[in-house]
Length: 65
Image (cartoon, rainbow, N blue to C red; front, side, top):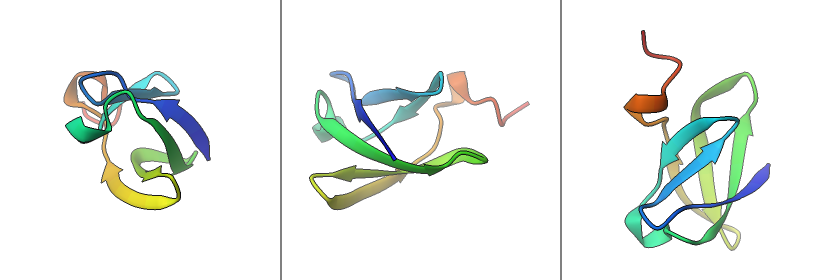
């Protein structure tokens, strides 16, 4: 688990990969739960409540060739 703050557009970075979260979560401290061997999807939590599953943005997605 890691804590990240999404920017005003709702984008956060984890290990150099950008993930888009909801616009309502911009500038919020979020808990990111993830499997380090499967960064193609992460879970986003806010204040102990599940928010969404996020995938890397297409511009920073190392899983797409």
